[in-house]
Image 1 (tube, rainbow, N blue to C red):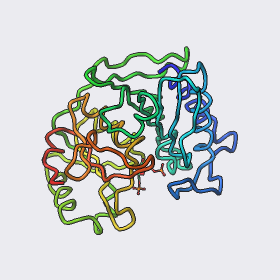
Image 2: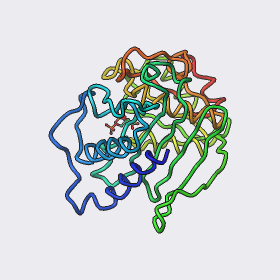
Image 3: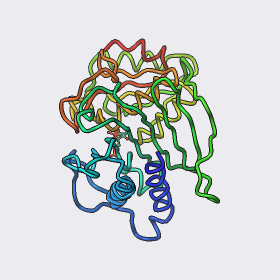
Image 4: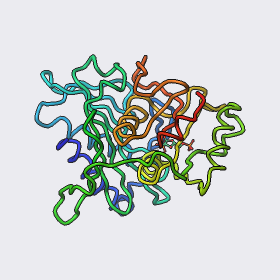
Length: 284
Ligand code: AFP
């Protein structure tokens, strides 16, 4: 986690001065997902790779920004999977972005189900740099980066996601091409008492709000993304572990996200994640 924290510190520092260095904007390239690569996507990926290469602990890394996994230390014990800069299309607007990561055992475990994750979490680069870490059976903790010391300090020892809650996060512009069941689910969520729609375009930012306030984030299959948009290994599964450890839940169709055995490293899944009682009402 020290290596991940070091990458997060570097990304946070670069984000603060990115506009000054003319680091905003696109590189003109697209990644393996067919998405425009921002200059800071490239920076964040390099920051993770360089930090994780230290100390010979990490054998293999899987990144949203790399077509194939990279091999690091020959005798390393861990596989790291990450989206180095989630929501990077927010950058030019100065809105929140994040990093998502998971730690698994040796190489073969990269293609196991989410239950093989040893630690998972995310950084949220907003008004403060926040770090959430979860591991099976040990709950989820919230840290904040103290810029005066460079240390992460504990803010919450044991986060609990409310069993239900008002926040609904989804790209409602795509609802016309969702299944009737997905539309009906969103309609029920929006008609619950005090419900409110909040969607930032960065999964980490939307998920974090739901973790604290309760509610549901959904990105189901639609016309443009038949399998859903979000990546199983370094977006959906890490957040599913955080959600479960905080008392929430995550589904991909009718399956628990944590139970899905991936078939490829960049596999996408439809995702419904959030408060336990809200996600339980998802028909799948
Ligand atoms: P980018 O990293 O390409 O900006 O994608 C972000 C993301 O994977 C996730 O963070 C958002 O919740 C989701 O895509 C937003 O997708 P839409 O723009 O289609 O709503």
